Image (cartoon, rainbow over all chains, first blue to last red; front, side):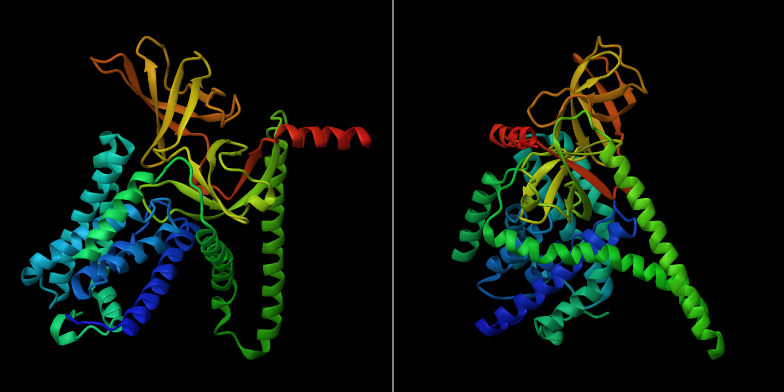
Length: 177
Length: 276
């Protein structure tokens, strides 16, 4: 894992937000224009997971919040639920760091899938709590799973790109694809 | 650790104040939405260009150079015909949309769909009309087939519509045949649920559900959908009813926003008409 100065943080954040904006436009406008309305992969989750897994910086929680704020421009979900979940996940990653393996594509896919399920469990719980209706807890959880599998399969390539954006030392925490 | 704690506290505050029925936007937020929405809108024209290119140019890559100009001309004309046909179809759709709902005493604003919400949990559409076109928050949105939703978030040139498929949108409705009252709520997979209908009400599969006109958002009598499933459980006082919306959300391209004028605006309008 790497430590970053203010300049690297600003540059990395700007590039990550730009990437997220492009992916959000792809998901919200391009896919529906092609007739794909029911399949909307949440790239913000993948980006937050990357930040939690790979970045060691005291401002990680603020970075997660910024990513979620950009996401909220494209979704009425808002930034708060994702930021809260993201910070909890980044804290859990800190304790599980030694157990997480990103040396192969398969291990990356498995780790990302596990944490995505944890993410959707947390957000579905918070959303159900907020709306006061736990009847929709499981439907909310299940509807994200197909997209999460697709995102997990994409994650080795995606992490490879973000490794370059954040200049993560490939020997220390890189992902093999 | 202090950063984490601060963001967690801020997030909890954010969750507490988040309103999934209506949203105010800050100037900064509106600016960013206004900046990104035209790119989302551009995705639609990109699709048309890509499909047109695939249809009309890829096929002629290997033809001889002599025929290239003629073929190009033919392709251009074909493209023009295609564009005219699309415009004709759009005109017909818009004409039907404008003719629809003449009896509803509200101003109608036509809008095009720009994008869908980025999260699966929310069924929200973005349209290319905003407060500068006279839209107001909570204005109902319809098509000639029925109810779409209402305006949830508004910027000067764009608006987010909370559709009836969203679980946060609750529509006061009645079953047209039996006049049984209930609340339509969105569930996943392009279906809605009609809640709080008494077990003793004799509703049937195929019955039409329309807006009740209560709740101060939707005018009375707009089609919501048709009952497609009824489950009467052995317990409870209500029945579980699934409603399939009249609007085909897969093929939604244009919508009509109904704007209710304030008393002052109505007075001005009446004055203008009397002057004419």
